Length: 430
Image (cartoon, rainbow, N blue to C red; front, top):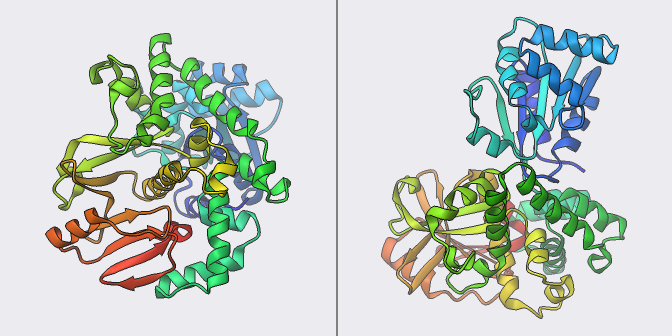
């Protein structure tokens, strides 16, 4: 399945191949798949090494971090000859070896033409907790997120529809109504399954019938996340991580979605759970959305204590909340359909900017998201249906007079009263 990140890999190959390439992302987002595809397609030879399952390879890094010695030892161990001018080396699950990560600096600085790519499911956590000096400036770091709606459309063979959506967005003109309805229908299916490649593959194999998808696949991903919490943390921290993760459906189900530690555990305090929350955010399992009262640039300078937490993937959120796909498709759970919709937009914005914000004034007014576009703070209101009335957005516009505003809903493209109407299926184009 085609991923947008592939063009970044080609750019790395052309421009900065001396700098090892590190792909960071949550488990099951497709890191190993895309790097294997890249290595096989773009290089004459490639060598795949999994540091989690290949203990003896891992031991080589424990003995030395000098590139020439590492390569020589690998050649002897595997009884192969590595032509470094023609071979790209893929170090998978590199988070299990801090010494392997440290060695990337020396691969970068070597006069020899080493080509190294690496990936790991918890590299964000590893970077934050690196005991020694992380090789900053010596590694090209990229992030891989679940597939967005555009990647989903391409995967299921809807390239022409995708192009029409782009044209309507660029011109801010309504999409032909039958195509608008088709795009919305596909969007509803996407929020049921989410963007994990293995689930989208299952959707395609089941002839694009959401109700035929084996939900145990999504359950397996959730189980692997929980297993990672246990494998890479102390027992007490693992328990706290799991409690926070399991609380997200309840956190988002409230009218006021501000994160509350009391929903994690009745007597919980922030100081007891802050470290665990930071671990989950760094692991890319959760997304933090910071509260803002003063919508000024730079937004980061005006962050308040309040924040929201979203899940990394809407398909995982649906499953964790125990909502069936049928409920979503038949509009039987409009409250949580709204939650999934907001989470969907949070995913999109976070993948683009790495930091997301919302505006709140007391308990009366709240705008779902704020984004900075060329120095202008633009409010974004998100609706799961075509009922787009919003006293909060109206108040915000009257008070702060933004250059324009954005409303994302099931309504077609349009620009009226200085508000851009953007259909949910085109939010990735923001």
